[in-house]
Image 1: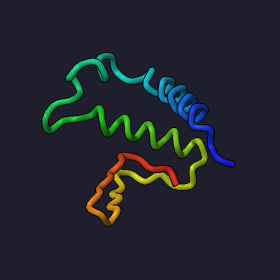
Image 2: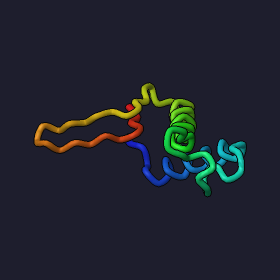
Image 3: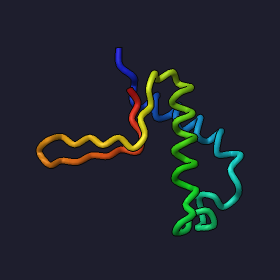
Length: 82
């Protein structure tokens, strides 16, 4: 039995909303935390998403996985659940 994509997205969004409630103001709506050489927004958000996915009981979560499909098609998602 597969995972319902809408239910999965809703659960992920709900949990992410709870975790970002403790993030400093202007973290996502300014460049206060995103500058050349000091980009906190992306890695912190990836960390939060990994935490959520592990809590959802995915046995493995891969970060920055390179999926080179052989026909010169390259796909490099930030996160993959296995």
